[in-house]
Length: 120
Length: 110
Image (cartoon, rainbow over all chains, first blue to last red):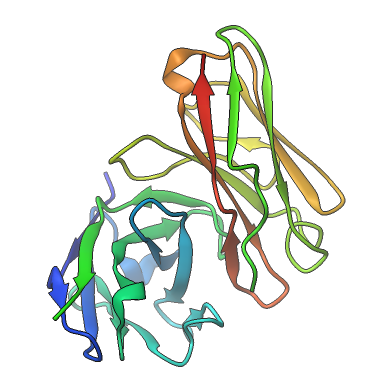
């Protein structure tokens, strides 16, 4: 059974870098699938942040591209998100997910999500 | 990329059918048959209900169905049940090889 688990600080100061890791269990990232980060501000909708494949370049949401880095560590079976120069607008539930249909946005397995608050 | 347009709310009585629309452009919804639908209950992770416009997911009730015409995709829920009360989101693959979500629709079962 494939499971995803997000980890990282729940509080980040404005202008600093948000760093999260998604640990995948029950499946080897290097075997395939695209892996994504998605966020949801409190009371608002879902926003796709970006995706990565174990052997390919990441793809990012154009609105976040200048501040986002997604990377993968196959040795640890993890992929990570870094979002720099954060503001209060980046306060959200951050979730990692598996795209079950190539890169087409059919996110069939999700982590439980981790709430990140940007505040001094 | 702009979020896909969904009605903010929808409602229906038990047993009725309801359709939620998701409108985009020729660069996303209209560009490919890669539209997905998600159900999200409060405090829970989204659950994939439909992918590639109309393909169902194993274990998901066949009361949920999807379709598309031009730049608008639709999710239809037949035989509405109390447990269907949730937020629903569409997503679409774009011509920029990214994914965009809709703003979400809150479904109330009266």
